[in-house]
Each structure stands twice: as structure tokens, then as C-alpha cells.
Image (cartoon, rainbow, N blue to C red):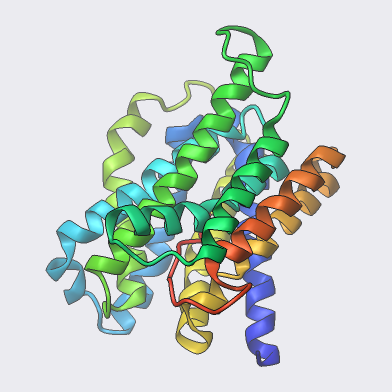
Length: 301
């Protein structure tokens, strides 16, 4: 990998890791729907001129129905669910659960698209599942009410968001192969903004939102969504989808680091152990360990 590509990969991981920090900061003031609406609307304002400059606006019309599905499954639903989860669990914890996305993508690809799953990948899925169990052990309580129940719902939301990313990755792989990647990013964000607008308006906070929260929301939209998508798709063009997907391994490291530095979040032995096991399972499921397999997965947060 060239130094420029490595620098882009590290910057992308830092940006997507920071998204969990910014969500945790701004979510209490905005609420999940309003914050995500601000995030994707800002991303559209960032990406649409870039797409127009590249002459790709026509693809938005041609692929509008498919982009709408991708926008809902790859942005609207998981963004809201992860934002909701950060109301209760730490940024680092949420980012580690996000690292299960490639495993979900491999499993959905096998069930839906009948992709071949090698024995090493089955081992990876099992190892990754074990990592999730280690990570959430003692934090799950199925009795409604109380802090423990809130944590259970937050963990469930994060895992459901990761599954949604996995479904979206396989859908995009099947329906959007060869489509301009910036058009996919722009169109999906437009669809997410339109889908969430009624919910955002209905739940818009009555109290004034402070400058700190607005700053976090703007950073989410410009840096962690708009700029990050440009970096991600540029990496796919230069080093391929599989190597670009390796950013999955770096996101939790940055998210945990940002959470510890700026929010004082604790890094526990359980988080470290669960995260390590999940990343080993992800490496096997992606085919990074063992014979390579060219599966494009969504890693964006």
C-alpha cells in the first residue's frame, strides 16, 4: 500500500471513529432522528456539488429506486440506531459492535445471494459471535425498566444497525455494481434525508440547542459523512474494496481513543477482550486471514 493510501486509510478510520464521539456528544440535545437528519442533510450539501462537478447527476434519476433502498438501509436506519445506542453505551463500546458489520455482510450474502462461505469464514463468524458474547456479557438484562434494560436496548439497537449495514452492502453489490460511487453516496444521503425528515420534524427538540452540540452535528455531516465517503470510495478505486474494508479494524481503536481522551470513557478489560475476538472473527469472515475473497462490505459510520 502506498503511503498516500495508508494516510487516507488512517484518516478515514479516525473520522469514522470520531463519528461515535460526536454522536454521543450531540445525541442528548438533538435526539436520534433530528441529529441524523442534520447529519445527512449536511452530507448532501457537501456531496451534491462534487457529483455535479463530476457530471454524475443523471445517475441519481436512473437509479433512484435502488438508491432509496440503500439510503434507508445503509444510512437512515443504522445512523438512527447507533445514535440511539450512544445515549446509553459509550462511543468505544458502540464502535466495537459496529465492527461486526463484515460478519453480518458475509452471513447475509450466504443466505440471500448464495455466496460461497469457506470453512475459515464460518470459523470467523463463530469467533466473532463469541466476541460479541464476551463484550456484552453481564450487560444484558431482559427485564424492562432500569439502567440495565436501557443498556440492553442500546446494544440490541447497535447490533441491528450493523445487520442493516450488512444487508445494504449485499443489496448494493447486487443492484449498483458499476454505478458511480459518488452518485451512490450522494443519492443514498438524499434518500436518507427525505425518509427521516417527517420524524425529525416531529421530534425536533423544543429547547435551544447549544453551540457545542451544533458543532458536533456539523462535524458529523461534513467530516464523518461527506468527507469520509469521498475518502472511502477513493480508496476503493485505488486499492480495492477488500483492502478498503480493512478500515473496519481501525475504527474501534480510534473511537475508543477519542472517547477516552475527550469524554473520559473507561477502557475495560472486557471491552479489550471482546473487541480483540470480534476483530479476529472479522478478519476471518472478510477473508483477510486465509485465501482472499472479493466481497465489498459497508464500513461507514
